[in-house]
Length: 74
Image 1 (cartoon, helix red, strand yellow):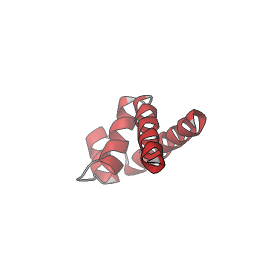
Image 2 (cartoon, rainbow, N blue to C red; image 1 turned 90 degrees about the vertical axis):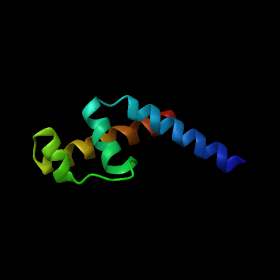
Image 3 (spheres, rainbow, N blue to C red; image 1 turned 180 degrees about the vertical axis):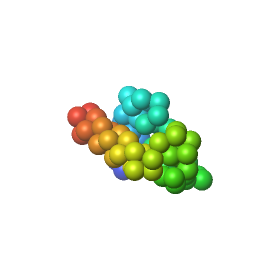
Image 4 (cartoon, rainbow, N blue to C red; image 1 turned 45 degrees about the horizontal axis):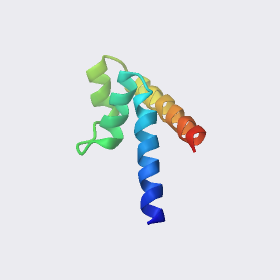
């Protein structure tokens, strides 16, 4: 029961943190980590008209923001 409660709380905090990101960052994280058919850096680069390296940077920054928000909310 405690494990289920902890898991639910973590999922809730993750979704809240994700919603605090800008739309592009949200989309990058969803497409790279949360969807069934995960997109590559190159596919997302084509979608947004930037380099794969820029997508990697945006992904890294978004993950850092989410981590910080989840730690703060804990």
